Length: 432
Ligand SMILES: Nc1nc2c(ncn2[C@@H]2O[C@H](COP(=O)(O)OP(=O)(O)OP(=O)(O)O)[C@@H](O)[C@H]2O)c(=O)[nH]1
Ligand SMILES: [Mg+2]
Image 1 (cartoon, rainbow, N blue to C red):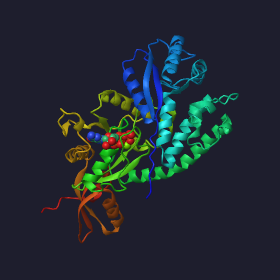
Image 2 (image 1 turned 90 degrees about the vertical axis):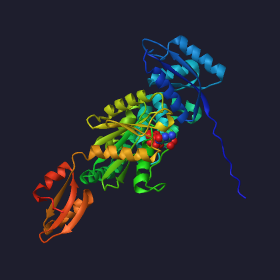
Image 3 (image 1 turned 45 degrees about the vertical axis):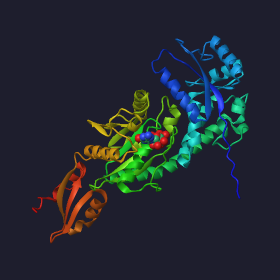
Image 4 (image 1 turned 180 degrees about the horizontal axis):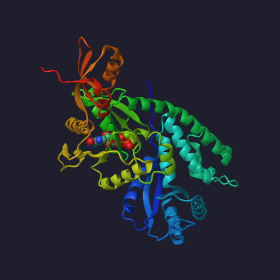
């Protein structure tokens, strides 16, 4: 008989802290920080806040507050404080010197979670670049401060695979440039695939939104309802945790109406995603940047869903995605007792990704938008145009194909672009 041992991971207890700057969104970002800490296996047991007009250049908090934190941490026997903003390297160093505590800022926390979640080679390289860029200005040539971080298990241990003593600025820069080269080679294949998809003329729909909103679940349910691929490897990874998805997956959805489109699922957002991280993930997000339609999935059951929508809008802007039509998909309506679903409101939908009727209505909404300018026509292609026939069969929706004396006749639904391309071959509809 084999015995299995399960280790229950002990969560490190931490205190979170932040300056409110008088901002209305402060409470929401503190709640978010608690969630981020939990995602990094930390347990938040208390919080410290201060409303300062200006951030203290030396220690972020005012000096009275710094002493208060030191005492609170001693009283609660806590060694780590998580800060709601990105701190400068000197602020971090000063705070640690004054209190003897370890400080982690929001950026480092998010980078740690991403590092933990990254599984594909591409995601790993992207995260490592962002982490090294974060670490670069924080390395002191004289003192190896990184050695003391989080009981020796700090920032540089995960992923890089190098001993801490080797990490000086020069080797880090070299590593960043090597990784960028490797990433460029990896993304080249992706780019080629993307171009092929663009040329395929199938409309492209991208799921975007806050992390844990239900994007991957929505894609999986569309696949399950319409292609019967439940539990197969075609499905993407979904889980109740922040940043379950770090890379982009593209799947083809084929509806009973024979309409087809491509749908992509990608990394979710959170407030103040580190800039370096967004920069490294730009190639991953390229799929959304070239979509014909964005579906912003919103966790409608979360009391902070409005703030999450603002966060998503800001992140999309930062990535440079601005003029793609977008619909709002208010998900998890099943968790909101008094909400009727599925229900359309113009181009928006209230639904539950776990409900097949919702998924059918969502598909109908999507197709009504992406195929609005498509037309079904009859084409007569001479026999020397066999290549075009094959291409249309691969990329468009062919309803009927007949061989006539003069060529191949197709009843086919075409995109506006294809309508132009094949205008010369259009024939009058055949009367039944
Ligand atoms: N009750 C309920 N749970 C849902 C619904 N949609 C998704 N979930 C759950 O929400 C959690 C997150 O779902 P995902 O699909 O992984 O979320 P995501 O948007 O892809 O998240 P990231 O990849 O982290 O950005 C999972 O536990 C899902 O089962 C829904 O309509 N109702
Ligand atoms: Mg996901």
